[in-house]
Length: 404
Ligand SMILES: [Zn+2]
Image (cartoon, rainbow, N blue to C red; front, side, top):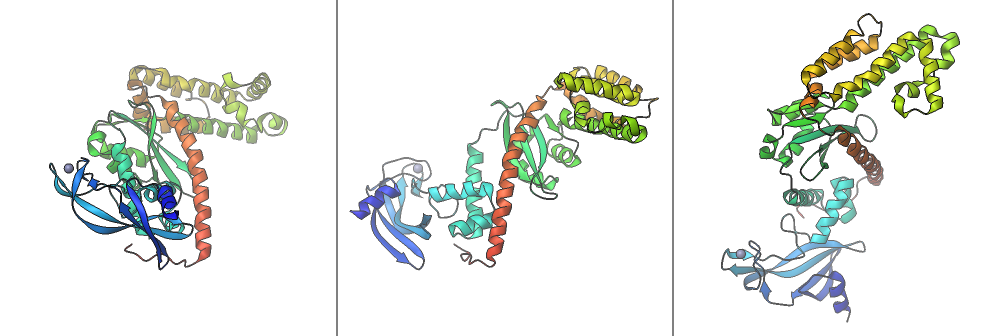
């Protein structure tokens, strides 16, 4: 019996297919109940008698290229606790537009990698419907996700796609469930972070004491606006990155100044100069020694670079400060302008750099998770751009009419 087969393929418990017809472009499947007891849509109590019913239609996954509509009797039940309420149906999501659970899941997954418009075109749904499903599903995931106990956040931006396109990743580097990536928002402006805060919740934000971030002002502003008592910790890796740039700048200056005979020694040596000495192989170490021998100025920059790391070893702000003063003091009579500029930048952000003395947040996590997430997002962004260009090339595709 083909209806039995389709019922089995459909896989909706307690429902049986009784009719298939086509209406306009859609396939309409009419289902009937296999048992006449129902579950309360409010408290979940089972085995309740029906109160009344009406015929409901919901969109299901595509049948080949055809939109499928499920038509079935939806009951209201009389629940001793809740009164007369609409029943809960297993194949329907609790919230959101009238679509089946499998379709809602598909929409939600596709929305992670592409635009609402594209998902609408793929599945024959109006863009607004896609958006509403996506929001309802996200809300569900959010409410089911445990977030309590987080007191440190990490912010990092990544460049995705072409041009000035950024995403912001927000993580919990040492939450009660271990390090976790919490949220991703498009953009890196203060206003772009608003969806994160409304998702995270006001009450939880009050309990956040620290946030690790780079020196991008929007992160700081956004964090302090939502966690007024919070302390900013500037991420070590970002600070060091600026230092490495400064040392490389010195190398370039020396290359220009010394020129001629030393050119071979100085050019193309960025890596040996900027890598940690302990990570270098013997030949690279030798090349480094030769390099530093020809330029005392570069040698000085190098020694300062290697020692700067020490700043993160302190647990006392006072001692860390003393160390930094001494480090800056060593620059005094040098002509290492790039390093002086770096020192001035550190000075400006010193409070946030020294915050690490009070709270040793595992800094590596922010960087490494973000690296993983970056790979995924950059790949997805590429896929999205491709998909968008495909959609654009279709021109005016017939979008399903609104109000679906
Ligand atoms: Zn109930």
